[in-house]
Length: 221
Image (cartoon, rainbow, N blue to C red):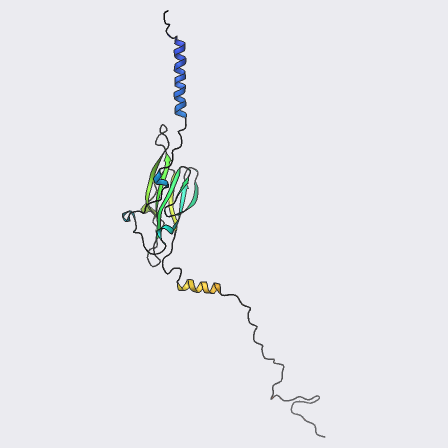
């Protein structure tokens, strides 16, 4: 029996199905990728060449807490992020990780506050590529000198607001100790004012006034 070749209509129908399947595959949203391990693992201590040297005085590095500002330029929403050294926080398609923070001692001038921050963003270079995580920033940020190092990203921005730490003597300074003693002193009942002398009482050497007479007068029988 001779084998018939497929008709033109069948070939056209198959081509349409293949084209539809290809388009469906292009429009399908790629599965979300997991953040890289380095974005969620404990942050390593930054090298001294990357910024100011770590100080051995004051609060230990692991106990320091930084307050960072975070801006999403898509919706113009700003929020504060509070992180301990080595912690990371995910906000949407961004992960902010704090390695450590530092501020100048009270006797140093000018005053400065810095934090070693890393920013990871899940994004795609083109519409044909799937979402992948990229490290877009890693370095020191400074509160009073923000132009020294900035986060250059079209969507997200991060900056330093504070670093909670203390240096030796700050908590035991004379001014703070005096204020603490004053605040701890109980408020007692106020003492009664001293009694004022009675001006109406006659003095011992004052002349005696008798009824019907004047001072110094006396009647004789």
